[in-house]
Amino acid sequence: MYFLKCIECGAEYSKDAIIYTCSKCDGLLDVIYNYSSIEIDMDKLKTECPSVWKYAKLLPVKRLPVTLKEGGTPLYKCDRLAEKIGIKKLYVKHEGMNPTGSFKDRGMTVGVTKALELGMKTFACASTGNTSAALAIYGAKAGVPVIVLLPAGKVALGKLAQALMHGAKVLSIRGNFDDALALVRTLCYQENIYLLNSINPYRLEGQKTIGFEIADQLGFRVPDIVILPIGNAGNITAIHKGFKEFEILGITNSLPKMIGIQAEGSCPVVKAIKSGAPEITPEDNPETIATAIRIGNPVNSKKALRAIRESGGTAESVTDEEILAAQMDLARLEGIGVEPASAASVAGLRKLVKMGIININETVVCITTGHLLKDVSSVGKICEEPTVVDANIESIRKAIFGKVE
Ligand code: F0G
Image (cartoon, rainbow, N blue to C red; front, side):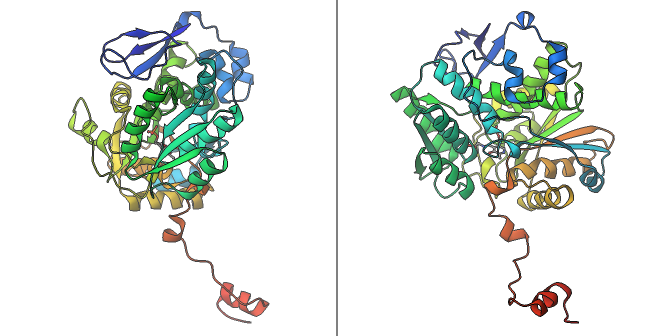
């Protein structure tokens, strides 16, 4: 059994309430389980391949899932990148290998399944791109109409193409993501449409499986540090919850430090962590090349601040140049193609190692949240143009070797 609980005032709500924040104090909600009633078959857990639905006993749904086989993403050991950064043990969990190419699929398979359980007939979200792509495909799979609100001109084309192709009604808002999120919340409230942004606690339940999978793939051990980009601040919270639940259930016996990375032009969580402030101060004009995390007022910031502080972690900002350099290193040293926001995790790791905040002996997992093909706009900025040659062998030899023998 499970129920919803406000993280601020502790008010409790039924698991079937259509509610996204506390109706008493507007606080964020958590999904709380009766862990003592959950029986985990360790033999099965050790033998079955990782996937979101492998952990169904720890997910808040009963009906058959709306699934495209999400999760089970690779955890790569990255020795060449580790050496360049100067640490001993680095893994990259490549969430770009999910069905739509981002971790959002984990949240959507659970959130959309829950929405059907609740009898909801239309789904909506605001998005910097990936959430809309994921909601569009799970809506299509479920046969339910989807509405997405995007910041006009600030969504990478790969993501927009997914939302359009999978049949969502796409509205480009003359405003930023924070404006779009405020508007979609009003729309959902007024029209009884189900909101599938990460303010919806059921969506985060799907995303906590990243934490389960990391532990699972490391032989039910936990790394010292997990680093990931922060945008709307849902994922860091969700993954921390996943690690906590495995510990509560006795599956693992420690917790990683959670480290969140934001772009310098869009880093309210970093500022709050560094200043020790209890809350973030929203930024009106967030800007970064990593459009996925171009968010000035992260809706889950209170949960994220709690997760970071409770875990003994931290938050750091990186420049767009540092993000692009990390994107290139992931691609060329490890064969991992990611979109710019994802590379923020590795850029942050590099900076924190240099600052002496991360010790070279600590085991680190960086999460790369989205695939390179989602957003190829940075490629032209950092890679050489293709060389155009005449269709004869001499021209080809000249282009490759610089001379004709
Ligand atoms: N990385 C990528 C590739 C993302 O798309 C996002 C968020 C994040 C990181 C940050 O995760 O919001 O849980 O802190 N994208 C959202 C979207 C906002 O609309 O697709 P977060």
